[in-house]
Image (cartoon, rainbow, N blue to C red; front, side):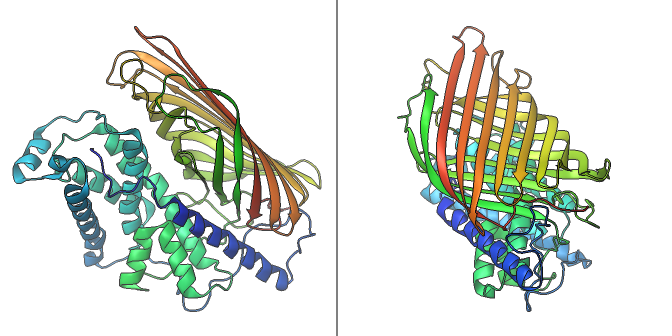
Length: 500
């Protein structure tokens, strides 16, 4: 797929951050409502359930139903067709590669007959723009009442339609993976967060709640505007326990080895970071029957390079379990989409993994939560704006990958979050000369709650890339930063559920 300026390079980052701030504020208000109703106060133990269990406000309707009328199945298809048409026309009239969007019957026939390969479009278009475009397809179907798997089918078909009839260039395998599969993982997380804003608005006026939900998931906002409550107003979270936090702060580079890049490195950055854990284990009667009944989402906007990361992982198929009186968990197959760009290099992957998410009470005051996964993805990696004569721009490959995320909390006062990731980008299915990349990333944050939902965080972020390719000098890039953030917590606690 070629350049798509009409699918923004997440240029609406400020709007997204505002929407996430509204979501965090809604969580705060919901928590306040729960306190007023007799729930534990801010001084209560950290074990209190962080479910944000305020009831939906009047006028937002009943939980969504899957449509049963045959004509309903045409609605997402027509919306995807219309969306692709608008994207094509906008790119044709305002884009830099107009010939790529001059679609004709002949170009469609040629693409139907041609083989699929990997393209060389800009990294952020292929690995950020495409998944976001796929998330729009997914959102159209989900907000029209379809379940995850049906919506995933629409997303995959919508991506294939664009590859064949949205542009004149040959269809791309990497675009189909990023849009048709990664788009469902990103789209479901956005749809769930959008629905959560509507469901737990904490007394916000409906208009503000609708606006914030639409910014997070524009396709959902469109269908709510056009069809109102036709499909049931709000997708039910089933009172899932969740924990969100919004951080605004400053980071400084403490070590950098930029390698071969044409980018002017910026050691100081202003950042806005939003993270949510949804469907925390241990809540009584909460079962993981729907894809993404557990998911984690994180996005960090940076003054230096737009988005430093967009990360999501969700449980596709799984089952809850317990081990003794102090441990509860869920295990199964996770789907994930990762985009990481720490100025020096960039890596993005769409993957399936086997893993588990669990919660262990160590003592009455000390709690350990975490997720561990092992899986395989299809990954793009390369130097940020590398010079073509000395370094490859970016490369694809099948990627064994691993993740370990832990959160240690002490009462309501403090939490230590540590997340480690590794990606080994092999030469398998690379479409280029032999070689490999190994990516390591460590994200550690210590958060100290000051008052109610207000906290301060110190965050260390380490990134390292080692590359080796035949006939080229081995590459080595490092970027480590240290930052301080004001953090707005979604609740007075740090996400722990107490089932004891």
